Image (tube, rainbow, N blue to C red):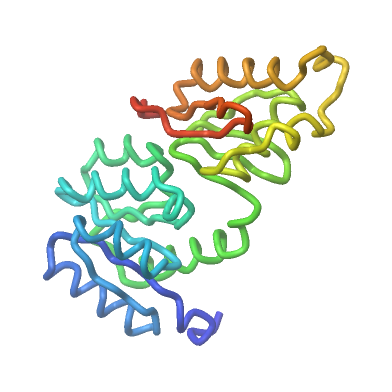
Length: 238
């Protein structure tokens, strides 16, 4: 694909090591990417104010960077921005954490600049056409077209009615999904018949999310409906 097709692709490069960051920035700028270098404590503000196409987060000897990616993944305004992690060759701990709150890809460094550029382009291609088709809330991933749901890399088995409820909640996040919208979803199958279908399905969903340690819960908003929110205590996922 021609370089021009990616000429305005914006990358937020998060790294405490300015010398290493400068090397990466030069490599990316050389092929036409718009690169902004920031330290971890400024990553959240910059991601919100100048929403990048891809975030590259250096986790080599990371300390504050780890907290930065957790915040980026937890907040509605930045949760859907794809993140490419840079990790050290022998960093087993970092690899084990890559699915916590949803890393999208990683590169082991040192690496060739061509590989780094190719991974960023790949993330942009995959995610550039998908934001309206999926929703990520912490470790919870919901495909809005099908209702298929994962917690980290583990698939969560749901009935048709539960999927319909969760998709509606995910579409509304972080706002409230109105009760009438939930009451009129086309979920009524033989397994979901009840005099109070919405409450039954919401209760079952709550149990499944809690049982899967999703780090996400369903909150009842009196006289309004329901909404998803991140739990106070979250659990990491393999």
